[in-house]
Length: 153
Image (tube, rainbow, N blue to C red; front, side, top):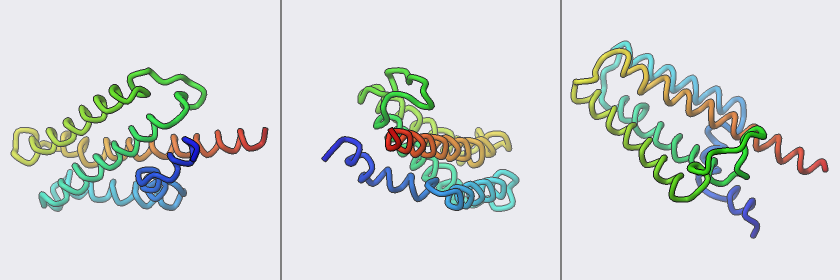
């Protein structure tokens, strides 16, 4: 089995396809993320479960998909080379672990109170998850374009 087929048959690649593989899926996920984030950020619903789902679990899943995708592409995104820290196994895992640590840390600080201000709730539940979804969509579409370009050679 080729490296490309192994990558495309992985669970994280299928998650990514379900999250951002079509315009409808991407739009739906972005809408749900922004809506829930707005409700939490403006204290309409202050449930810790909203913070857990949209401020911890979703961003961690998006982060896992993003780093997995970056690790398994050719080392270029839109014909620009990636830093080697993203491509090497150790560097990729270290950066991914650091991002996950930040997601969990900020969420805990929001939940416990020191960072329970609008700007931190906004960043944690709207901006960062939305940004990750947009990055995933761009990478996914660029991969599809790259596959089509190679297929037409």
